[in-house]
Image (cartoon, rainbow, N blue to C red):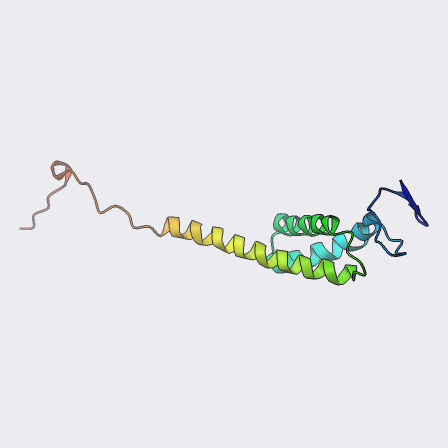
Length: 120
């Protein structure tokens, strides 16, 4: 286990190069502002939560990036994930609208079941 000025941490959970901030500290500081920003754009709380979760997963996967501006990286990554989520939501919406806009069948195909109308 590594140790830094903030106490013990798991290997790889602190930024490299004398930076003493942990992943947990970054999460605690930025999850709420990221969620507010994502929700403001998406207007969908579960979708905004998904974006924030995916943003922190990406940060965890790229935690060893040297000399990173964490705030800038988080908000840029979150913004791109919001755009991706918007495209997904719009695609689903278009598919739902398309299913409702299909024409109804023309009528019975069996001529014996058709009603004949004769006008005097």
